[in-house]
Length: 300
Image 1 (tube, rainbow, N blue to C red):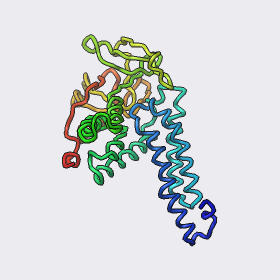
Image 2: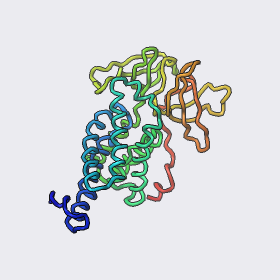
Image 3: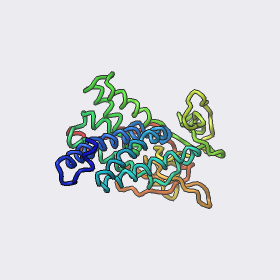
Image 4: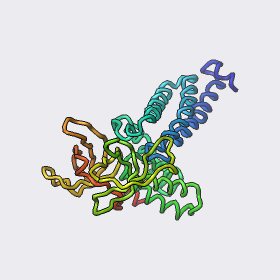
């Protein structure tokens, strides 16, 4: 059948080859690449190796799409390869993973988010497709979703099912909180507060690939902790914007300005505008309060 690609494009052989290659073979490579890159990602650190695995799949799909003239699909593969490559390029500087412009990786969130919404509508909350497409970069939403879906998968599929196991792993990753410790700006995983919040207990420093056995637990003054990108936080101690105190949000970007570091925080509260906040006015939200996610989910 490989020779059919060289036959006239109007021929049945060519059209059959195009259907099999585009709708099945290339599509399969796209899905394998997407799963490799995004299935276990909430922490960008865990995504490095996944992206390395994903790129060859995306390249194979791109080659097929180019071969059969599906240029739009090939261009989509270029975008996926570029996004995955940007993640890999951050390997030499762990802090960059948590201070990248959020616009570059927002496309990843859109890809996975739209996949989840589509699966919700077509298959329902308890389907494998829906549960496996919960890889969102929005930390707060992802953790709430993973908590609910973990319970659903456990009830529907059982605790030993591969989907339940993967969902539980994803939930654990959703609960991870990463920070940058000053003055060295090394990345650590925050575990909890101590001494009424004056101390933050962290583990690390984190290297890539991550070597958990070599990490150590440290007690660091909280004023030396900078929540990393995608870290869930709560505002406190604000004077000029006191209405934001107690508001839950997540860090979307780190900015270095003349007067110091500012964190771009997107708030969960509907209608609340994003704000640049000093690190000392943010506390890490280790626990995310559970709420009704959406009317769609409740119907399911």
